Length: 127
Image (tube, rainbow, N blue to C red):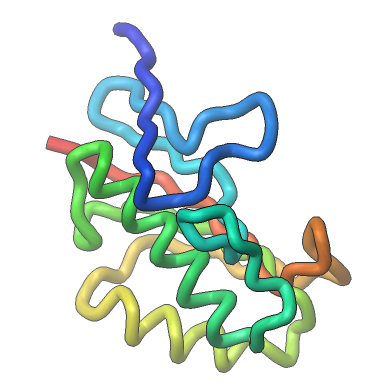
């Protein structure tokens, strides 16, 4: 089995030595996504909701570029600044993902790189 990388201009380019995602077999491993628009503009000054929506949009764009869809998300890990944002994260997450209900872990943290309020990584299935 070989591993291939996934790259799309519908999500921000990696900021280091990593891929947006890798595919092994029928699994796609999506690197942690910050709230950065595809054009590279960071949203660190935006509110929590806007940041979560952008990070999720990046994850879903990468999943789609790999050949998957929302319903094929198998696992999501979200790192959020402040446990008090848990409920709001859950509301936004449910609205964005709709009927898709992957396994999920939310990890409250003190800070995320560059002052962002959220980072989201995921594992999905592709046909």
